[in-house]
Length: 65
Image 1 (cartoon, rainbow, N blue to C red):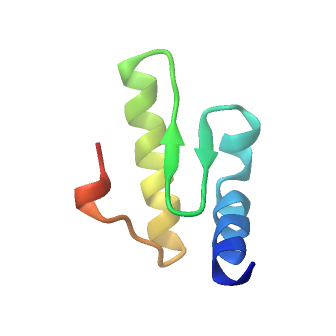
Image 2: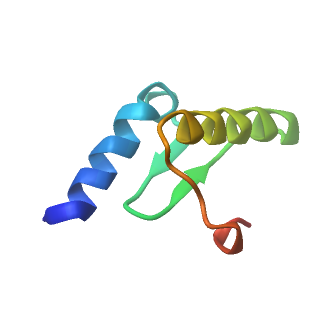
Image 3: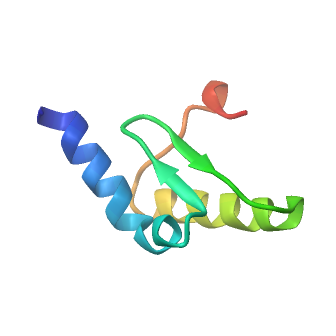
């Protein structure tokens, strides 16, 4: 399992409430955001990015779509 399992567990921990609300799905190297409106999407993405930064985790801009 190694690092991949730990990364997934950590991502799920810091995003737990969003995962529980079915707004976010965290994979080992991807985080998917699903919402019904553009406004809600922007809010959730901002929250995810804030939490990642607070935990010294960062995304690769080339992976962001």
